[in-house]
Image (cartoon, rainbow, N blue to C red; front, side, top):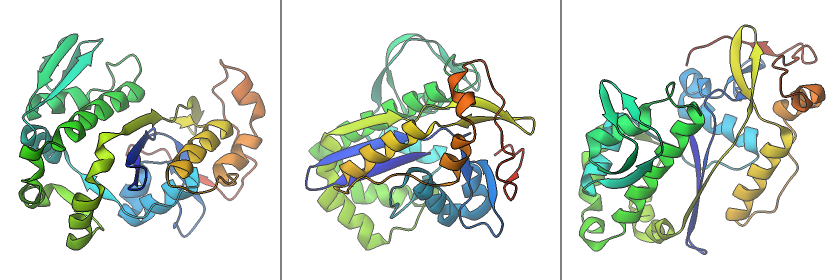
Length: 265
């Protein structure tokens, strides 16, 4: 899950990866429901995912694009591959990208971006590899030989993409926002592991949530605002949790109306 801001005035793009296991309220649920943030799409599709992420980091989310692995393969092949550098061997589905520098085709890029459990950094390492590949695509897609064929690519990717952008809006993005791809900055929201109802979550400290919100809002030309949501309320109840690096017990008793579910989304 990534949040992307595009600012045509500054011609800059900011990309932030959100840990899939982040503890977050499912905004739009009939009852107060706190789960892993990636459950929002499973429970309420893009509508709930947008509301949940927006409330989580205090940033307006205007549109969403969901792509499957087939789209990533097509994108990488469209730009004739991307260059990467890995400090570890990356193995997935019986294939391995060895430690070092590589030029990856679409099929190899899938291997590179999907490994999670064997990475010492877990999902955080996978996020960095995903960002690396997407940045490589964005850098190359600006070149004239690829730019002139973007409309054809979008047609080809149709079956692999779900979005609430209209065809006209997509065309506008390509025509008016492509220069934002020349200056891309990426970041991660880093959490702390906690065990809730027998399931492992990533709990994001309020100061880290606030710092992320500030950067994203600044990139959009918006004034910063102090976050106040279910996550910051829970964090306030757990100040000792964040002070003790060995403590993985996160107290949720203070919000009795909140329902926690052990999910595998």
